Image 1 (spheres, rainbow, N blue to C red):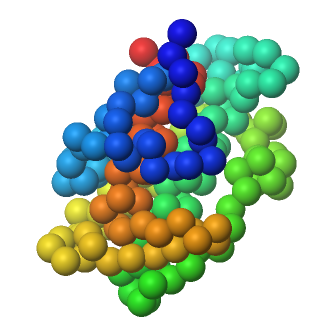
Image 2 (cartoon, rainbow, N blue to C red; image 1 turned 90 degrees about the vertical axis):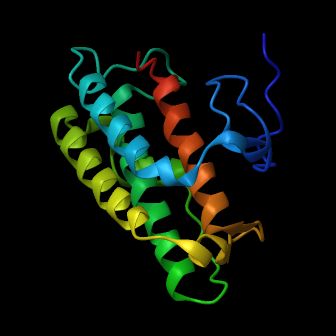
Length: 173
């Protein structure tokens, strides 16, 4: 059994392979992020077409639909953060509580087909935005509400892990 690093310290996800999903953000090139987004979105459409997509595997684990809603929203949140970093000097990102978002967005009752379409749209929009980032823009900075510092590059690599990890969460393959 793999030992998962302290999840309060997000930096481990940028320094080594995740012991659960295997994604290694330290070796990931941000230039492949748009294609990864598109590939993952396509895979999510298959996950969300499963007959049991709305069923939780247990009481404490989100259903694939709930994870799909989360991934859709993560695309939007990270897109907004990248835009802020590219257009503002050292922005501080608003706090985003994923559990509160799940309740407010009624993830548990979402329709799988609608979530799939929305996820593909959000992923494509973010992929297009990332295709426009170049040169020194990758080094632009921003802060999480807790003070954690990111560059566009580190934020995108962190996002890439999140994207792949949630596919692992629902056993995408």
